[in-house]
Amino acid sequence: MKLRISEITLKNFKTFKNLTINPNPDFNIIIGENSAGKSTIFEAIHLWEKCYETYILASRKGFYKVKRSTNRYVNYQDLDFLRITKDEDLFFDPKNTELGKCAEITVSLTNDDEDITWSLGFKITCPTSIENAFYRVQPISEADFADFAEKFCATGRFLDEAVFIYQTRPVAGIHQFEPYYNEAQIKRKIQKGASHEVLRNKIVAKRRSISELQESISSILEKEVSFKLPPIARRDKDEYIDLLVSINGSKPYDLHLQGSGFLQIVEILATIEFIDAPLKLLLVDEPDSHIHSKLQRKLISHLKSIDHNQFFVISHNDQFVTNAGEGEIFFLNEEVKEDGVLKPINSNSFDIIKNSLGGVVMSLELLNQSKQIVFVEGNDDAKYITTLYKKIADISEITKSISDITFFPLRGKDNIVQKIEYNKRTLSNLLKGKKWKVLFDQDFSTQEIDQRLKNLMIGKRCQPFSHQGYCIESVLFSEINILKEYIKSLVSNLSDDVVSQSIDLVLTEISTAAKNLSHDLNKQIELSFNGQKNNRPEFEGLEFIDVMRSWESNNFKYERIMSKPLIQEFILGLEEKLQQSLFIRCSNNEEELSSKLLLLYFDFIQDLNDVFPSFKNLLIHLELFEEQSARQVA
Image (cartoon, rainbow, N blue to C red; front, side, top):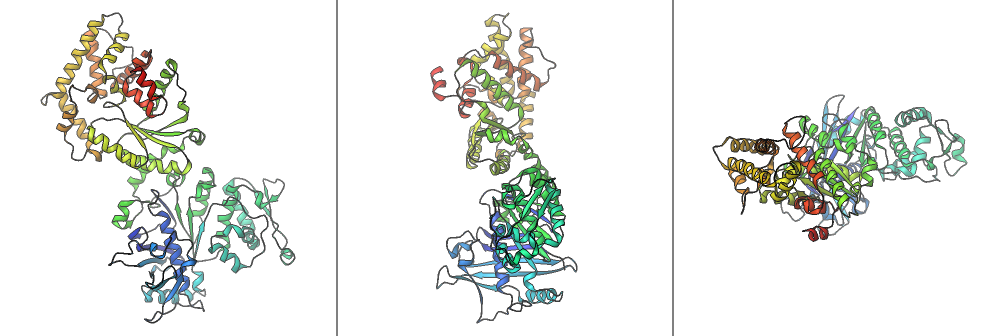
């Protein structure tokens, strides 16, 4: 009989009011924000196992039949795997009169050989007369339990052998002195979460198939691994197990001297090899704690090849996400909890997550050295900020180093809050003690929308900063006096008055056209706004006329409209009036023109008075520039 879990249903259990999960028959990776409830699913599975064991008769061939006068119980003290401080913490809302102090956990088991499914569910309640003593357990459908017992025991096996649930835990090390245990004692250790304490016993117990275990470990590690087992006769003479390991033919050393990554892999594989059950359910919480990313991929590949196994993995690591197959990734968030159904991510959403996590492959050494992880919209932003920093460092005393910062590109501003959530969650699992920040363009955002977006980012514990302008290049138009001095340096052969008047004239022409509802430029800007609005949830309810109003306060804010196409129009219009090129370039492409104009500005800077206030504030936000220094210059 080949069993698998086809459905898990939770009702009024901890953080879940109602939740139904339809897992993949082989591999399941659960991702989500911290405190979303990922580990709670594991707790529910463990509690179901406790209830299941409680209902098995002493004969091991049937379940207790519940009468009104009899119940089965699980002791509160035996549930140390539950993260609760009192018995009523088990329930979503213990004070709700409709839900009360009654939870339901149902695990549906499917026999793939005959396509039969049994819904084995339990109602779990706590008494009102005494606190923190026990939970009362009742089956939801006795008919399903009875039918499962009849068909499973007909195979010649006992009910307590049907499902084996094992949760791996990070193994930093094992005991140097491990006594010999019998099979029942080993299983009890595994079930109590102390599997690593009997690692030697599990390996020795599979003496006859030790070559298969060695081959599996060697394949994953890409090294020849050999165990030197003690003779069988030593069991009756020795108190402790003497077990040596040789790698690539080296001198054998005791098992406890091996690295944590090696021990973690051996622990998982030895446990799976040791247990014989129609369904071996392996729960893995944060597997990357002690396993190198390269080994993770090979371990996953090997685990998927083992029959009669079903895996549930909680991970924030991109190795698991990016290498997962269709139907194997489950994203748990508040929306899922409200809907009550946790489904695998569809292919389109899966592609989005893969793309958003792509930057995680950056050098771990670089990330580990960084004090700040700064999300930016694209690689150009990182290049510009680094160039600006180097220039400021040349002309002033900056004690902070930009090497303390790693820029993480988000590939655009669309759905930026979700991107921050995904990537921060993934990186936080690898990196501790970092500051998280985000830099983004204002583009069409009004002041209110910009602040609302920042508040959402602050809610994700990410410090936000938006450039004073449509994009980082438009900051050049936030202080026209500085812009004029810069442009004059590019055409030093012309008089200052001619350059200044020409700049005023071109900017006036652009602003007049942008404000004219019947002008083509206004329609072009509106078309661009409508294109962005479709992918920008923060723009919901925002109309183009609202955007136009945000352009003006006491004076027209040129920086608010100067997108790359308009910067292109400004440069070409100014060159036509001056009858001279501002700079040499390969083309008149808007990307090249706007980028060139900004990079040449950085070269222009001679002292801090030449720096736009928005750029000073940016460096202050990144803790690269002292706020006091900026005030002194101002």
